[in-house]
Length: 312
Image (cartoon, rainbow, N blue to C red; front, side, top):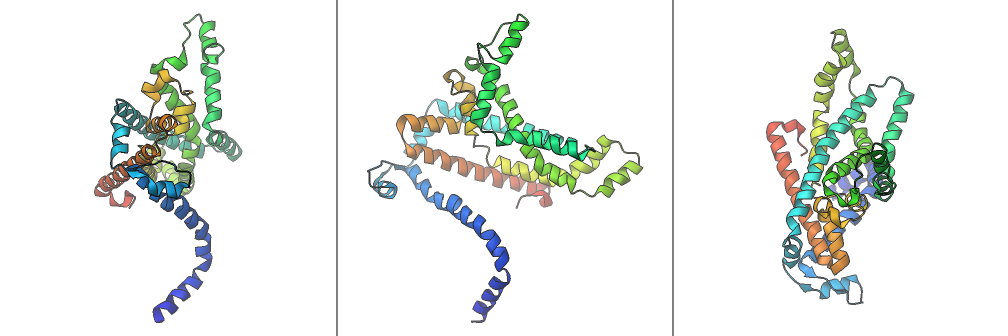
């Protein structure tokens, strides 16, 4: 009885905080934990029998690891894995560097109205869907009336069929990703920089330190724990590709598949042609397991080097 009474007392004491957390907890349960049951589809050959999802799921045959063999037993397995890993590695490295640089530049703007204007301008692309961004890119790269080809014609240079020439697309996709995400990514670092003790910078200025030395000796060391945490979280999703980026920007051009096909787009096309939901579930489970292993491994390495900078 004493334990029950103590529990109810703590519950009543923390009730306002618990109510604040409740919507997020419910959403987390509904969209993160309950869908875990769907991972069983990875080991079944799902067939809809007209009696609802649950009935179809229960009556579907178990197929073991066949969905995984179908997903990674083709000649495309190496290409989609390579593209997913390399693109995300580039996005993590360049995205982090660009976001930190942008946050530092914005923090150095003395005029706060201009700073807010620049922040808004950099943040705006984040709210655009890749469908819209795809049309923007198409207006630049269109073979007949695209802006880039018009400029090339003006200088009597050879025009390029952008949507059938794979070699340019790693750079196009990387630039598009940076343009769309840099503003949103820099907000976290900018918020951290804003909270730094300004007396450190004042002392450095008194000692004659230049802006670059202040950034190198004060800003970057103070940002180090946050950079590590954000990088670890990004590494956990290194096997997940942004579907909109790799599907809408290249406009699903078959000629570009060697450099634009990733796990997510490959599964989507496979689902459209074969209707195999089990393959989709297998891909999701594979990505989640590998992401979990990468986060734990990366965190272990960071913990061995600097315990205070680790995620957990």
